[in-house]
Length: 100
Image (tube, rainbow, N blue to C red; front, top):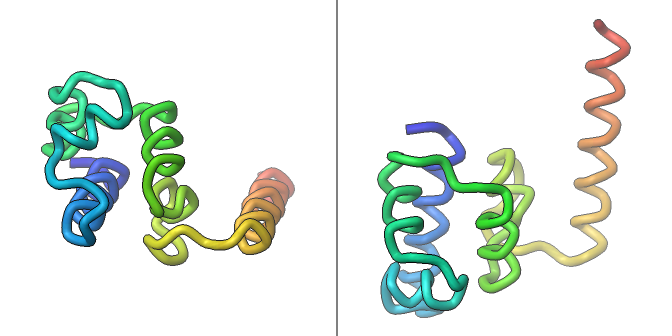
């Protein structure tokens, strides 16, 4: 299982555990995808697409930055925090390119 699939699985558990959705079927319905898409991503049989991750984070209070990188908190951050985290990512990319 990839790290991304593992974090997605944790996020689905977080959503269910905190009452935002009763089960994976409800999550799939909310995201307008087939239940197998969620099931396969949770099991790690198939990596979740970026579109699925974005839709998931739009529908539930899950932090996209955490889901994508594992950094920060699983709980969605404020817009200001998100802007700062995106800027940090941009700077990290610039540093990597300079090192190359």
